[in-house]
Each structure stands twice: as structure tokens, then as C-alpha cells.
Image (cartoon, rainbow, N blue to C red):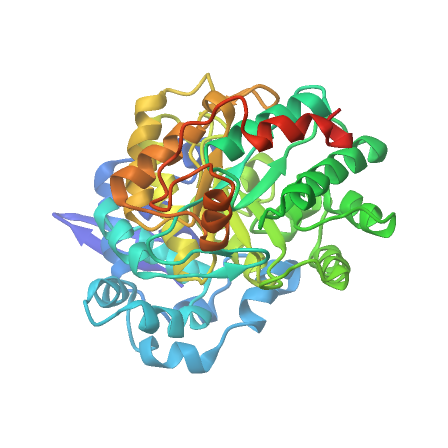
Length: 464
């Protein structure tokens, strides 16, 4: 179905919905690389004007990636909830923006329509929104999940403690883990990106984290971010696995390049559920995404990178995850060139995921060859905090020595909590107080060498 609009004396025509969405996207290097972006600012504005008039029902009638060719498209269409969609089914994309910004469209209202929205609808409306619009609406979206603690409550911010090590040295990882705990980090998860795929090495990591958790009775969950099929093998071998991790994307072809499918994810989900390790809930999947992954894998089907990213959230939503995050600047400047593009992408991803009902966090990050720096990350971190982000990363010194990129530190979480008056997950908060790491107010206490956690951790067998 073609779309058109006139700007001044110039008539702009867009061949189909896929083209219209791409041309309406804010400028980013990945879409230029793919040959999908608007050629001029005027063409981009023309596309936005045309997109604003598109009925939401059009997204149910025109699949960007054909239903017959793509299991993600089939998932999106087959899971669409017509009842939830009914209250907004008469709206255009522009009307949806206006409706989302109404004071009467509160948290309960947005939650009620979440399953009636498709990823393409929320990607479309995000293209019409300013940064402040993305922040304001995302703030109203509350998504609460539970495993051993409760994540996503209003007025709370959690942290994934990321104690990576370039050789998977258990003592080095344990030292970073201790460092993070003493800064009050780790309530989202303690998640290790391993350097090795060796199952014996990975088993040691799972066992060490679980021994620390049990020794100190920490209400946390742990995760080793290895391939999902390896985690299935580890479950069969008796590994103490809390969360199952996998990187996912918005098309079947891209997921296949990651070595996964919906069937494999279902198998992993069921295997982890069978362990019954959660204490306050059973949300146990952890997914990571990122704009540009579909283009990098040649699996974008001519769809712009931000819409591809939103489609990944349909995959995540299927498995009721505890955590989802966009690793926003990790893939590099070929896809998000500079700080401005990274900031915009982070706000888009958080907005789209929250509107679809996902417990969204963000790895506020950049690579060393991007036109960005830590000041840009401070800006994005602060904006996401205002937008109600569920969790961020906590990395010693903000510098990941295994993955070699720049992210956020334990201190950054302290800054954001202090600035916005945010607390940790309540169960974890209470543990920190019991352990004399924080005051009842949540403020850190001064820790001396005699602190019992410092004295006991070296005797944990996995860290010795």
C-alpha cells in the first residue's frame, strides 16, 4: 500500500509501510548503511507526516516481514490480543501519540492495552515523539517481575552486577563481586559474561556464585551469559542455574544467526522452570537486544533497525522474563554513530519495551571507536532514570576488561539513586541493612577490614 504527503510544493511517495517507517526514523548510521534512511530532513519530515495518518489497524494487515517466511512475524500476529486493542483500534499513529501523553492514560490504562499493541505500532509512534515524550510515557509504564527479589517497583532502581574477567579467573570474579556487593549492587542479577565456552569452567562460575548466595543468604539471582543451548546442557548436568540468558533479535533469520529459535527458547524456559529455584516469583529469563544486530546478521529484510529492535521485544514478551536490556552502544558506530544517536536509541528502546509490557533495563554504553564519551553516558543514564528504567549495569570502574567497552559503574548507580531518591529491590535493600553495608535509609556505611563479609568471602571454596 503506497503512502504520500506534500511538503511545500514537493509530493513525497512511499512505496509501502516498511519504507515509510524507515524514512520516518531519526537519523542513524545503521539505516544509512542499509540504504533505508531518508535522503534529506525534508523527506524525513514528510514521512513523519504521512506516518501520523496511518491507522493502527494497518499494521495488522501489512506484515513488514511476511508471515509465511518468519516465525517472529507469526508470533506477533498470532499473539495479538484483539480485546486489549479494541479501546485504541480506531486511532491513527498520530492519535496514539496524543493518547499516550494524556494524563488519563495512566499506568493501569497502558498496562491494559499492552498486549493489543504490536512492536511495529510502538516503533511507529516512537518515531513521532520527542525525547521528552518517550521519557514521560515510559515513566507511566510499570512492569514488575520477581525471582528472589522484586524488580521494577515505582521509586526503585536495580543493578546488574557484571564482574567479568578476561580469563574467567574465579578469584578475580569473586573480588569484583565483593566490590559490587559492598557498593549495594547486584539486585537485578549477578551476571558474568564468560570468556570461555568450556562447560567445566562455566560450572565453576555458577557454583561459586550460588555458594556465595547461600553462604550470606543473599536474596539475589545469578546468571552466566553463555549460549542458551550450553545452559540447557548445564541444567541437565546439575548446575545451580537461576536465570537463563540469551541474546535475541527481531527476525527469524537473525535469531538463527545467534543459533536460537523460539523452540529452543521454550525448551530452555521449561528446563529452568523445572528447577523451581525462585522464591518470590518465577520470572527467570534474561534477554539482551540491540539496534543494528539484524542488519549485522543480514536478517533485517529491509526493515529499519529501530523497528527490528522493537520486534525483538515480541520474542522476549513470549517468555515472561525477569530482565530485558538493550546493549545500546555496544554494537558500534556503524549502527549508532555518536552520543546523540546512542541517547535517542536508548530512550526509544526503553519506551517501546515498556509500552509492550517488558521489564526493561539498559546497558548505557559505548565502544572506544564511537563518537561518544562518558558525559554522553551520564546524560542517557539520567534521562533513563527519569523515565523509570528498571535496571542498569554495574561494572568496576565502568570499564569492562573482558568485553573491552565502556558502561556504567557502581558509583553511577549511587549517583542516580541519590539524585532521584530511588531504592534497591526491597528484599535486597533489607539484606544490605542486615549485613551493615547500608543504613536503613539506603545510604552506604563505611566498611572496615573487619567487616564479616570481607573476612569470610576468601574461604568460599570456589573463590579460594
